Image (tube, rainbow, N blue to C red; front, side, top):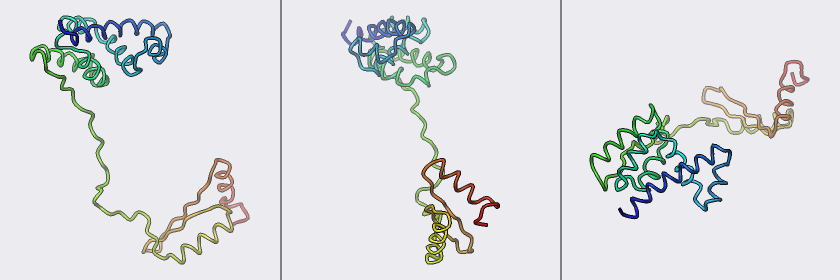
Length: 186
């Protein structure tokens, strides 16, 4: 048996040992320091110890296929996908690798990219300032009355918006009090 084949079995055994320590209450980073291992490797090996016993036995029976690299970077790196539906995807992938033999790699689906909601090629003007002089004058007047920095913008239809900037919750409460109908501003 090659060195790579034995490394897969060793990482499974280490994972079982580290999982027992984890269940006793030792955090993963302490276990990693204790055994002078990378934190990510320990975390992934502990997950490998979590897979069903029958799958672990199958992996141990075929050490030439399930090397350390396949187990850690192939299966444990994609834990969420492998765990779904009682390790269904992991089961089928193990069967496929055994059928194809030594040298094959796991073909687990990659993480799906999030859909882009806005087309990047489209130039969107979310807040155009149509009348700049009027906006600056309004900002100045609001800052004088409220005492807080703000931005004013107008659209072509003469509609607009006011954004008031605050630094903490107290300033927000002050702004809310100032804008109530009973305040001296109205």
